[in-house]
Length: 320
Image (tube, rainbow, N blue to C red; front, side, top):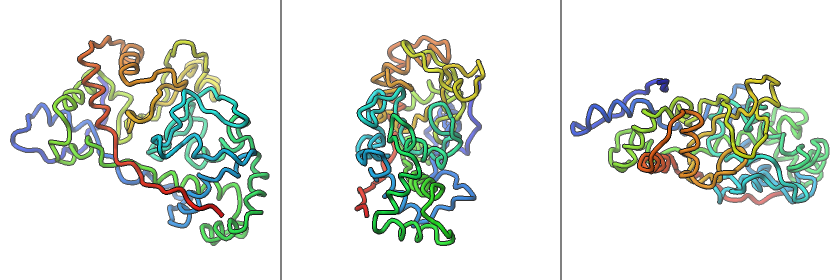
């Protein structure tokens, strides 16, 4: 069975079994910050500007939709709808993934069509179903708002023309890199707090490794950031195939992070599964060719609840 690279074992007590210690080593606590790109340093000024832009509805054609419309802080930075609703009430084909911990992913969107948060940030603005605006129009609208030019200048002081699409993307991406959820019960357990997990969650952690879930849901963010085919009943979404035109990528989607998964329902790319109790048996059957009994499902679901971390406290900013 494929498993993740072993992390350094956390301190353990004399009473903890060697067997339990063996399972702990397959997991890694979530860092406070994801990797920062060399060409987009993380500064307080960029984060502050990115926060405003994330909540800015004037980036949309209608001036009614912002990034936060589909990534609502009150809903674990999702919209909890099966698929997103955008411009003129249009309903999209895919579920809105959470922004939480998204900086740890190796690519963005369900089909991985953008390599990073900077690339992802501009997509929804231009998408005809989502915000339905063109970048030139969005930038012109921001330029006409008293105050935004100064904010861009403060965030990008070395640029001759700081209010640009590239800086718009860099600022939003910088803000999103701060939306992380460390200190989940599992993280505390890995760092030595043996009481942070219940006995059922510890048993579920063993099942997670033994059954093979960790083969794809590995690393600190519980995602290998790779693409795997899955047959969701009623869905003909081509998935990654639309990006690569490779037949092996048909109906393949990037492995979703399991961090905060208890809060980010509904599930799958089309939002067709409502609960973790629905999802776990489907994933075991499709991806691992395993049929799970009810007790195993309960243990795994209990373990998944231990991946809910501390939610970022973000106040809605006053916009210019």
